[in-house]
Image (cartoon, rainbow, N blue to C red; front, side):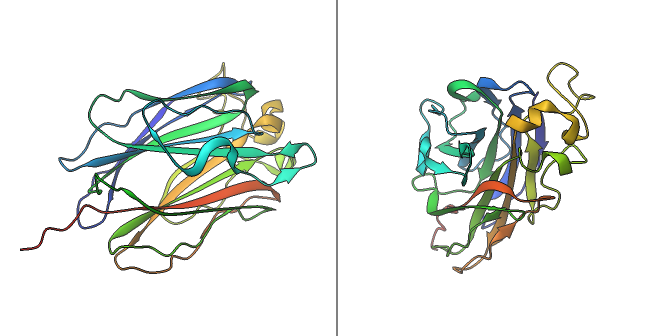
Length: 260
């Protein structure tokens, strides 16, 4: 079940243009196809494809896309482990859009709960769009994308968290797990929709009454604008109880400014 979010913008900072999401459904899946949000600008546009998946399967990302360093799946960027092993995994890929893209395709072994998103940003550096990258993991009720120090004036920092939901299942009273979002939230989903949205692949609310929550993940995405080179604050989300998570902060570099 896919959803669309659109918002245009311009200026000296990379501008959020839109996002498309997709989810595995309450029974899990072995692959996920996420549509590409439509173009909203005449400038160079960056596409960022994100997958959060339960456990730590051998994940393959979209062909022809570049993995963010350390975030190409499997033993790259993973959640804190629990008694059953690595709780969840984060994969992030990017490419400069050329108009030929229709979807970002992820696949992995075994049926898993998964949520994915493709985001589009305009006014980016087409030759070198990604700056500093940092991740961290933990087990708490406050998933966090870490502090990074930007490397260029006018950057935008993309913030991501993926959370396993098995331990907090009894406390999930609604249709989302991340009950308090980081600033400028773009996406807040779990790996299956509610039953009203999708009677076949959905369940709840509440998520506490869904067997699929045991195998589900939550995915949250936000971003922050940084007019000057600076250390960013962490981006924080909240859960109704502690569970395992991983967070990442990724600097997106603006288009070069021409000198007159």
